[in-house]
Image (tube, rainbow, N blue to C red; front, side, top):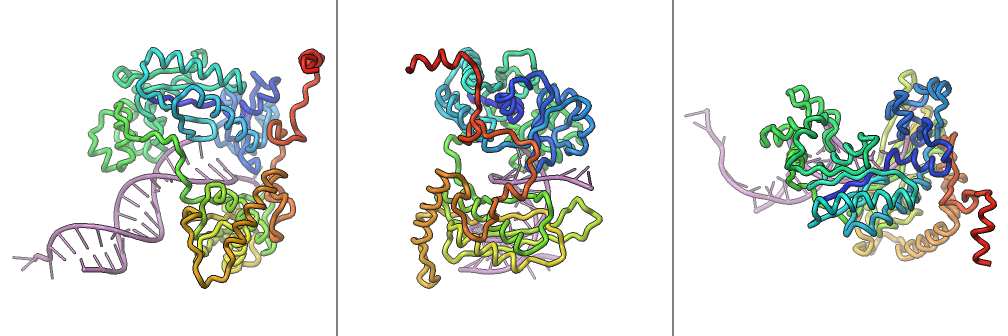
Length: 431
DNA sequence: TCTGGGGTCCTAGGACCC
DNA sequence: TCTGGGGTCCTAGGACCC
């Protein structure tokens, strides 16, 4: 048995937590760079604001209907997410954090009757302790638990919890469009529909070999999970990342090699932090730059270049140096660059790295320096210490966030202030 | 007409997720 | 005027091995 917990309109709910006056009002949260809508309140959905709608498309609606708009505040959401995960760990023997607002819960060996009660209890705990509304779906497989969660969410007046036993779910599955199944995206949905397969139930009735042939083994697994046969394992310990990186779309195009070099150094530093956190070192760094592909009227150019390290490294200094080298290979003067990225791949465990005899770098010195740098930055904030090649103001300077909320739980200077007479009563106990 | 049988590794491209 | 930033897995095909 497996449960899936998913916070309702997660980013919007995070913003409302610190602005309760927004409950009942249309609210949206935008992607990085204030590009398009990535989270909507039910009221915003009712106004017809699409997921992924570009900001300029909804501008009139926002003004007319008084939609409250936020830039995304990822540090805040990440912090609240971690708190939710800690709460549910008290109730489920094992959890798998699937995304910032979702977690699978291992309910192996439990009975349906107990699960109904447990799920309601977990939902109540998250609402009480984090102030965030969530829904929980429970079934025998992950794909069915996902579907159960979706059914719980659609039932606005319901209890927020839905059990979906595979033996009796045919009618429910027949009401679910095939494209709403977890793992069936736009392409597969269109393909299935063109073959007359329109609902999740119809998908369960197709011969397995046909599914295997057209949707690969991935599709077959989804089909079996819909039939109640678990195929997707529970992963309570997160796997080490295989690739990671950092990239941004800039608010204003960068034109000089120096500007791009600084941005890439920032990305390299951020990516380095990430792999040091998981104790990995990178064998390959790929830097890429590109112009604005939405501007059909402008000349387009984009290229990437990969640098291999003879000794895998996670030193920000060596990564930044490599990104600079890569940029020299790909930079072309005269183009406005809208996006750039640094990707790290060929990640290996740091302890398995054997410095080669002849590469002339004191890797142990770099390791100690990074340790010190991470400690300082961990305490005083990212970029408190940085390499000289990075942007003075960090990547934030290069992106646009016009409606950013405060770091209520993530920055001391921005902690929520409450003005109330009750405080004196509450605190008087301590005096 | 007809040309073995068994592997591995790598990459690009395509699908998917939040 | 204006559209993010992360990730994963699978397959086919080519190059190579004995």
